[in-house]
Length: 89
View 1 (tube, rainbow, N blue to C red):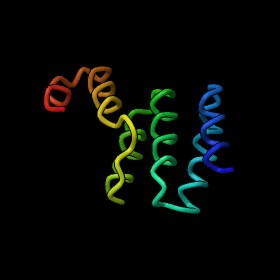
View 2 (cartoon, rainbow, N blue to C red):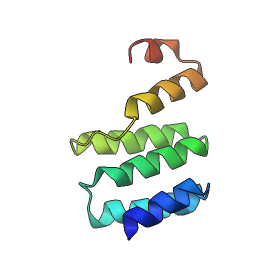
View 3 (cartoon, rainbow, N blue to C red):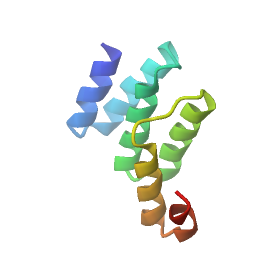
């Protein structure tokens, strides 16, 4: 139910709820990549880019590859105006 709760709240624009549900999922099973996806994208949609990048980094440290991570990293770099980062992606 934790995965579904994070997914559904994310899809309704209730990003804080999605973050909360997804962090509970990560706490229960830190090797489930979808929890990091939902945390990162929810933070991204709240313009909390540094925290979104941190969520991606936590997934990488567990040898997980979040879905569309390159898209998010590119978007964050463009929104921050960081050409040096998005050219290398």
